[in-house]
Image (cartoon, rainbow, N blue to C red):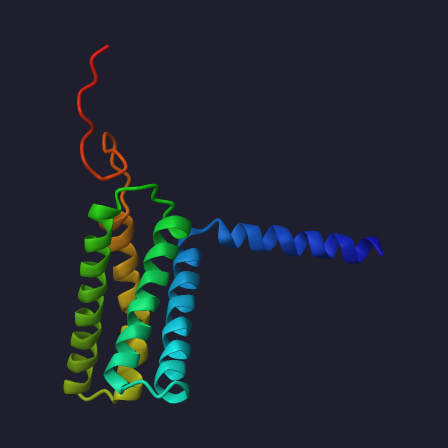
Length: 156
C-alpha cells in the first residue's frame, strides 16, 4: 500500500511543479475561458433560444471576465491596479485577434490551406499574448498603489 501512497505523492509533486510554471497556468486559464465561451454560447443560443448575436456576445463577455480574472489573480498574481490592467488586457486580446487573423490570412494567401494555417496561428498568437500580459498588462511596477497610480507623498 505504501507504493500507491508514494505514487500519489509523486503525482501531487508533479502537478504542483507544473502549476508553478506561469505559462502552464496561462494556458489552463485560456483553455477554461475558451471552454466557458463555447459551452455558454451553445447554452444561450441553442438551449435558451437567445438571438445569435446576443447569446454569442454574452458568452464572449463572460469568458472574457473568466480570462481576465484567472490571468490577473492566478496566473500573474497581480494584486490591484485593475483600472490600468483591464484596458490593457482588452487591448492585448484585440491585438491577439488581429494577429491571429493576419497570420491566417497571410498563410492562406501564400497557398497554405486554412486547416493548416489555423494551427500555426493558434500556436504563435498565445506566445505573443503571454509576453504582452507578462511585460505590459500585469507587469509588477514599484511605487504604484492598488489603483495603478503613484501613491501620494506621506509626511512623517
